[in-house]
Length: 316
Length: 238
Image (cartoon, rainbow over all chains, first blue to last red; front, side, top):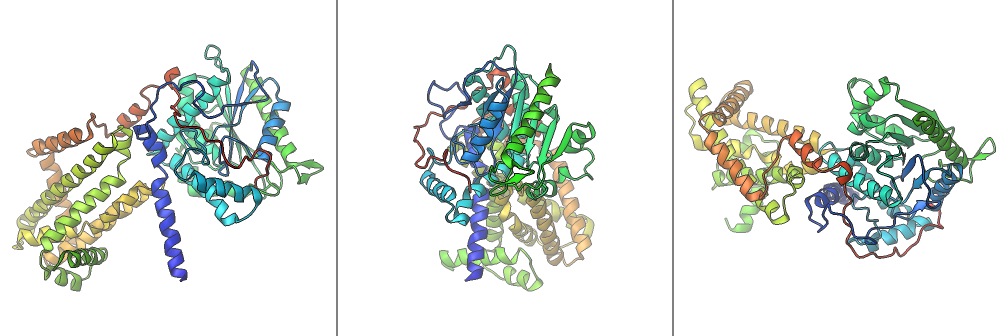
């Protein structure tokens, strides 16, 4: 019986892995009836600016972690974005991109298994059937692997760059002045941001900086296009270490890798966040756990605001 | 053997060829239709490998029907490559190692040695695919070494030399007198794909970079919008 269960589980993982690149590749090949043409007004997913319209000198694009389901944000994520908006009133923050779909289609939307994902989302927000609900994270994790694969990564990056660019243009990004861009990625969102970076750089020609909130990333070619990478990591968070182990380009022995080049150029800054966990209770965006009287979310928000101000000052 | 028995036998033989022993070789050679089985293994391995490497077809934006046709053509090309490879190994065995073994025997062992590459579709898996490709190719060479050594009654080192020199001969022929055949294979692939196929890494990147700039236009999301059943904005992630 146990052998059967293990076999079924392994088969399920292999089938899921096999199907994972199809969304990005099928989109590029035009199999889903979607081209690369301009969208008609109003037929895209919501692109909403946090805090309303501004005329900013800098844009922040937030790419959520692998628990992301849809364009809507979880309450804790929205809390972080609202905090950033309050601390950076001059800066436009885009936080509704679905990083795990090159078509920006949330799992609960127009998909063959959308009913299943809605149910999983219900389980997740109600805290029931945590193992089943984890299938959302698994599904998105596989998309991170697709993005980290050198064969599929450029296709994924091209698609994600288009999604981000649409988001920027809809929020009033001025192509004449081309303000700098800061990508704030949480966990797997960093990898997605990295594959999109070369295309965004080519399209916008502006400076792009990455703030990695416990990012799990490979030594992606996108690193070469960054002005700087700030990596925030908690001492109780072991997840970013998986990236350091799993992706050989992150090993110090691969001297010429994009990661090591960036590090040698002094463009990687690691910031210790104290005893914070990757997700759930005690995470970076938990406002019910405290360090020295400050809740985790406030500490994280303040740190990101501080970094964005440094980046902004560097531009001027 | 009826059709079902043939399918069962095929899978049994393919399974045995993943780690063949002398007893397996004797049993397989005693089977009716072992050459046909070798051809089938090669054709299915070619198809499987074409699926595994189909990212190239996707990036070339090959349409679905043509995609399937391209996989089929790849499998046929793989079978021809296998037969030419068997001819090359046979020539080396005769010229360098004075072998008198008939071509049919070499064709059977070489064809069946492609059994590990029946798993070639797994190369499509993200991130794990590339190392798997290396593993499957090494595995195939090892099985082929074992098989050729048994068929030609020689040591593993001599069998490996036979395979490597056979490969070198095939490579040389492909780039000299075999050019028309290679060109025909390319033509067939282009015809099947319906687009000028780009296969080199630089060219593939160029395809993706084809129209960025501000022309990096958003993908159409011309799909009906369905509001999610469960709104999550007021909920906490667990």
